[in-house]
Image (cartoon, rainbow, N blue to C red; front, side, top):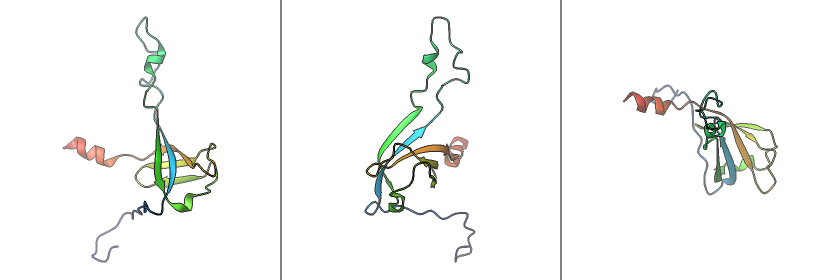
Length: 114
């Protein structure tokens, strides 16, 4: 509990940009826009159901310096973002993380209710 009596559920740790290292982060989403990608109108192709946002690549992301040298396939939780795995393409000069599981966005739910 906090000194003022509040019940604390979690503590966030922020990354100092001055001390952080750069990384590439790959955010994966569902591959298809529809549950059944073959559900298309006549004369159309299943490829039209591909999600253009199924992969977003973020560059120059800042991560803790302790992640330098993280081994491929190692797993980490990034606060408020989800769980990430070190990509096999990671090199000594380029750290790459793939999001494996996103966290639920409780703020989005709260905003929708308003």
